[in-house]
Amino acid sequence: MPARLLLVDDEFLALRLLEDYAARLPGLEVVAKAKTALQAMEILASEPIDILFLDIQMPVLSGVNLLKALPRRPVTIFTTAYSEYALEAFDLNVVDYLLKPYSFERFVQAVNKALDALPKSVENAEILPENAYIVVKVDGRLEKIALEELLYVEGLREYVRLVCANKQYVTFERMKNIEERLPAAQFLRVHKSYIVAKKAVQSLEGNLLHVGKVKIPVSRERKEAVVGAIFGV
Image 1 (cartoon, rainbow, N blue to C red):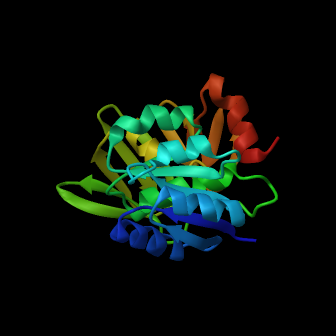
Image 2 (cartoon, rainbow, N blue to C red):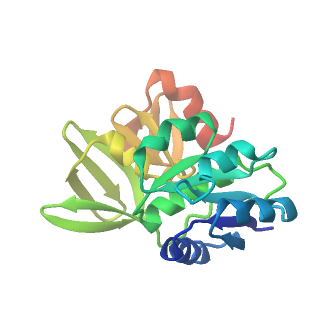
């Protein structure tokens, strides 16, 4: 059963972008759209909604005040052009905070967080499309790296190496920034210097993960979480 979405934004183009992004992904159904918080309240009172995309700055009633007024809140993602509401979003248990303008890749990350937060009665499998990618700058050019092909990421001080089956890319980037851009359902930080694609891991021997012909260390403090996340034991 697809996750049911309500899109709320007073800007026509913002609503259209959300609807377009949602249409690209399986497992999502846009049930309704609203241009005001008051319209959204009426829809929420009559329709079961799983995920609410909610603009903050709207006339009459803001998205923040709408959320505070709801007796039962859907899993909510804020969309806004203003970063100063991030702390309030955290206090309201919003699962993600999309700062306009945001990319399709960033939208997918937010959706996956929302799906993870849904009750098990809702189909909430990872819906990352097969052609999803991460964009990095390599030697002055922008490279699109398909997440389906990415095996692991290695931190090299000021640089990061992204390794695929047949190619690798080195970019001037912080490891933490790369980690935040990768979907947590597919990738896992196993060491301060390594992130692995869960599906690429073949085995664990001692504190070493076997990814193809490469052995990747697992830090002692992360080992229990790694075993649970990758091997389910």
